[in-house]
Length: 79
Image 1: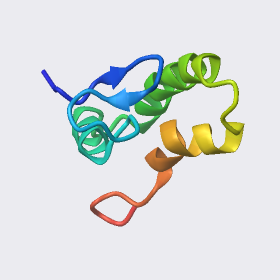
Image 2 (image 1 turned 180 degrees about the vertical axis):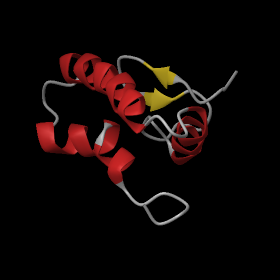
Image 3 (image 1 turned 135 degrees about the vertical axis):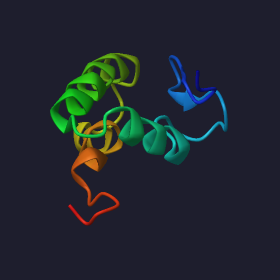
């Protein structure tokens, strides 16, 4: 079990106090969802919806990049 879970409603990381998902949690999620990128995006999409309700002042594009956009970035094999 990770200590890098979200602290709501501020959406900081419970393990390192960075914005959630923090770099550590992103690495953990990539490993947990290896070979299942759509499932990872759906999982994080649900958190995006919750975060948008808690942070209505945050630009939608910034929240999307923070919660879902990074999942399409190049992985360890350059894909």
